[in-house]
Image: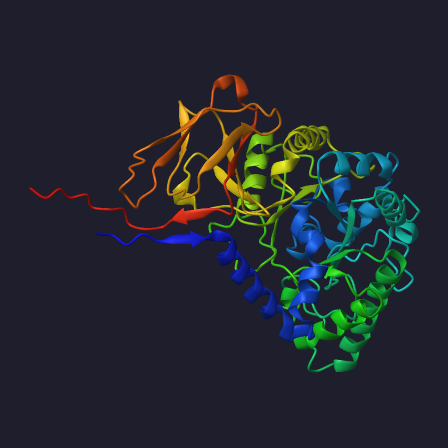
Length: 455
C-alpha cells in the first residue's frame, strides 16, 4: 500500500523563501529580515509596465542594437535625434494608463546602450535636452507624475555600457576601441562617468528600483558592482535592484521566455513585449492578444513572480493604439480580479489542477484557479486534503456547485473535487474561481492506494 503523505505548502514555501533570502546576504552584508522588508512591495506588486522610449522610435529601428550589429550606420542612427520631437508627450496620460492597468510599478529607460539620456544629464553630452529636437528634459515630468500617485513605484532603467562613449571599450560587434588591461586609466574615466550619471539619477529621483542592463560585457570586479550597490544604497537604502549587475541584484529577470519551472530566486520578474519589439517599430504589427498576455501574467503569478509588460511610445510621445487597447483590457481584468492578484503567492503543483493556473492567498487558505477559455463541463482538483467551505467566481461572488468523487471514508487518498463552471459565469478572457478552505492548504502527494479485498 502506498504511504499517505500530507504536505503543508505554506511551510514548504516558507522554508524556500528563507533559504533564498539568506542566499542574498553574502554579497552585500544584508541580513535576511532586512532583505525581506525591502522587497515586500515588489513581491506584492505582480504587474509592472516597462517603457522603452528613445530616438530609435523615429525610424522604428532596433534600440541601440541596430548600429551595434552594423545594420544601420552609427551616424545615421544618432541623426534620428534631430527628428525626435516628443510633440505629443503627455506624462499624465501615460501614468493614468499605467495606473489603470493594475500595475504597481513602472520602469522607464533613462538611457539605453546608445547613450541617449532622457533626463538632463550634466555628466554626459547626449541627451534629449542637448541633442534632440525635443530640446527638453523628458524624464523629470514622468517622475513627477508617478510620484503624485500613492501606490505606484518608480523604476529607472539604466544601461551600464555605453556604445557611444569614446572611453567605453566596445563600439560595435566588430569594432573595439581599446583593451581595458592596456588602458586602465581610460576605463577608470568611464567608470567615473557611470558613477556620476547614477548619482544624478539616484539623488534627483530616489527611485524605488534600479533596472540595470548591459552587464554582460564586463565582469563584476571590472564594473565594480559592489561599489555601485554601495553608492546607491548610501543615500537610497531601500532601493530594489534587478539581477543584471553580475549577481549583486535582488531578483532575477528572465526575458521574453516564460519560465517552464519557477526560477530559484525568491523574487523574480518576467520582462515581456506586447509585440516582437521593445521600442516602437512601425513595421511590427505582431501584437499578442490580450488573452495571451493575461495568460502570461497569471502564469507568472502562479509561479510567484511578476510580469513587467513593455510599451514602446512613438517618437512624438504618443502610445500606439494597440498598446493602449491592451492596457485598457488589463485594467478591466485586474480591476475585476484584484483580490486574486496582489495578496497571493505561488500556487500548487500543476499536476493537481489541469484547467489552467493556480495561486494561493498569502494566508494559504484560499486557492485561486485561473481558467482560460471555456471548460467542457467542470474543472477538478486532485489531492486536496482540506475540506472546502465555499467556491465562488471572483469578481461577481456567484457561488458554484462543487462535489467530491471517490471520497471513500476508509481510503487515505482524498477524493477529487469537481467544480461546475457554467458558461454564464465565464470571463471573456480568463475566469477566476476562489476556493475557500478550512485552513492552510494541505495536499496529498502520494502514489495512490491499492485497494484489496480478502476472500
